[in-house]
Image 1 (cartoon, rainbow, N blue to C red):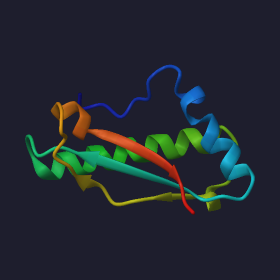
Image 2: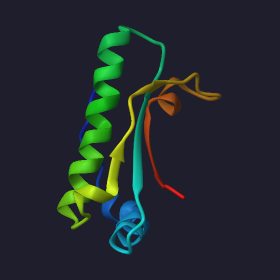
Image 3: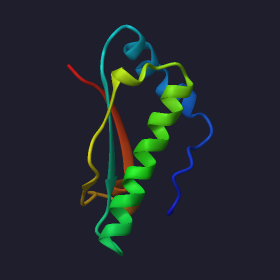
Image 4: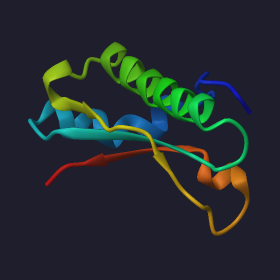
Length: 93
């Protein structure tokens, strides 16, 4: 909680996106936050988390031109607040 440090094993989770980006597809990275606590802090944290994923993808050889980072979005998770605090990565069509 309150951290933008990536968990071990993230390379495996991101491998599909690395391959997609290297074949010319654009990748969107979106940070999300919950409604608990200070809204400004939450938006900044969601942005830092998305940027941490972007930096890691760059380190894995993804060209910067293939990456797009979205503005942070507040979500109300259907489960725990932790589910609302996340980063989503997807291939843009």
